[in-house]
Amino acid sequence: MKAVKVKYAVKPEYAAQNKANIRKVMEALKANPIEGMLYSSYTLEDGQSFVHINIAKDDATIAKLNDVQEFGEFRKALKASEPIAPPKATKLHLVSAAFEL
Image (cartoon, rainbow, N blue to C red; front, side, top):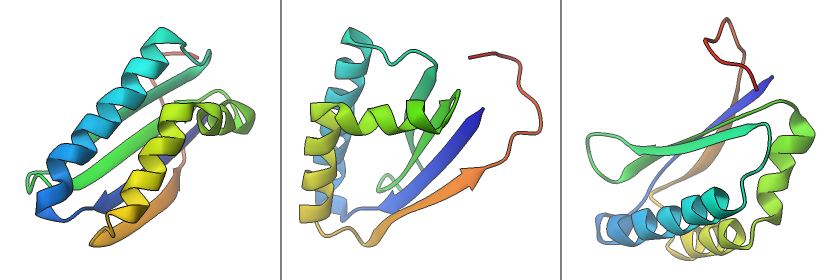
């Protein structure tokens, strides 16, 4: 199992648009799920810092997210917004889980 956390912060005036763009990605994933992957996004208390968690059975499954058109559009829009803190990916190492992929 592989897990990646991506954290970034957007300008306050872009937070609502970023949330809308994330929802488009999630709707696309709900309509066409990627088997073996759990993907979620969160905001921190400040409302402009975001965390995405991608848990997948392997690296090839994680890479499939890049094939989702809405995800590409989300990434382009985020980059164009000039985030306060750019996206930083961190690989997570599983200790234990109460689910299987």
